[in-house]
Image (cartoon, rainbow, N blue to C red; front, side, top):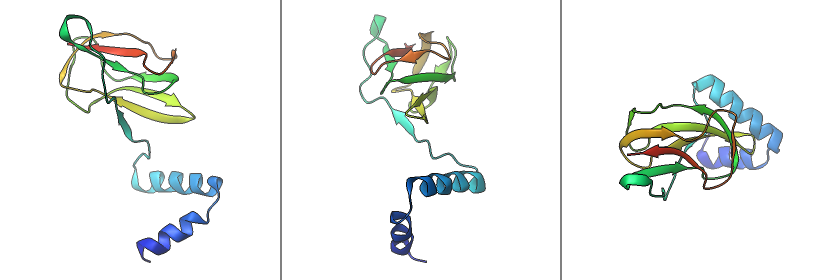
Length: 118
């Protein structure tokens, strides 16, 4: 089957059928369709650091880092839920976590500071 044939078949599917297909692919291959979201423009934090901000409104599900932990660019620091989808929020740069500004279960708005980095 060619890519074009696959895309044509997918274009004829309902949203429910697409959702079931994505779930089946995730289960079969052990992957997640949730793509990491890089915070494009991190706001400056105190003392020349940066803050990792929420790219959209949502609920904090999991905090993957702790204060004092070194992080690399692109490393997941927070997992949040927005529009019924899990979204990984990643570090905008290498640094050290100076403070966690939210807790699991918090609801946040777009642009809310989540983690401060040095």
